[in-house]
Image 1: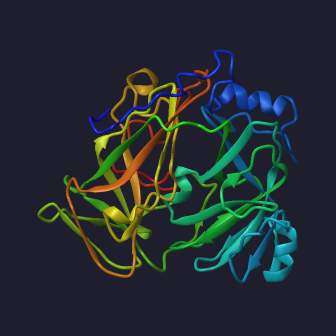
Image 2: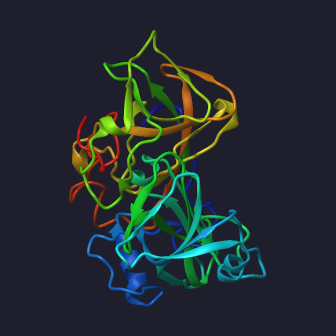
Amino acid sequence: MDADLTMTPARSADAAPDAAPLGILPCQAIEGLIAQGAVTASTPFDVDQVQPASLDLRLGARVWRVRASFLPGLGRTVRERIADVAMHEIDLAKGGAVLERGCVYIAELQERLKLPRGVSGRANPKSSTGRVDVFVRCLTDRSAAFDDVAEGYDGPLYMEIAPQTFSVLVRPGTRLNQMRFKSGASPVLGVRSVGVDLTGDVAGFRARRHAPVVDLDHIEGHDPRDFWQPLEPRRGELLLDPGEFYILASKEDVEIPVMQAAEMTPIDPSVGEFRVHYAGFFDPGFGTEEAHGGGSKGVLEVRSHETPFLLEDGQTVARLVYEPLTARPVRLYGQNGSHYQRQGLKLSKHFQPW
């Protein structure tokens, strides 16, 4: 790791020696939650649904087109709030449906939680979701925050879906987000700055407007030239146009130790007027020699705000926050195959290689 990764102890020195470990639950603990009924689903779980430190969540059959995003608030359920803002209901079981860019949807998820005391959750878009500029956030009943699942939550899960650049085709079972489970208040082990790489033959990709539909279940099924414009480096700079979506790569390799997981912070006003990384989870073992030979960049999903912004090669654009796992995961990132092993600048798995 880089020298600017500052470390702090995983627990206070006066913690009881027999206290439950604090941190993110590894895959075997997630499987334990499923076995004890703390995580259930309306259909059988997929064999690859549990990741090294997270659980992929799947779309159910019902989606509502809504006129506005919302939070249910502490006293109401998501279904009660949907009744206030729904425009129409979509049945995904009838061959799936296209979710139009610029629109907001609320979808049922197949998974449901009944978390034990001391266990909470946090959701985030999957890498492939962020790389096609689909903004998703998890909703729970009686909640005043997106993506955070309260300790001991007992109830259904929903997802807000807002395609920004491409319209997308989804079906029941499509995986757009993932959830981590935490034991207690997970301590922060360190924070690492992430710079942007604007060198090489292609410095990045800019999304084309008025592109075809992206089928989110069709792997390597799309010609990237229909969706993306490659960007040549110019003097190590890139001018971000307001409202445009870019795929860039980190300057440094990213490495996540096997006993840690990380999340890239999506917005940091101190580094510029743009948003970086819609999909922020990095699994234990990502980029390590032990897991898959090391040498992996972080792919950055970037959108500028109201004003143009000039990026320079190496400029800090985001930060990684590292947290401990409660135990070593029995599977590490990429050991059973991944579309993003040893990645450099790389589009989502939906596109053929450039």
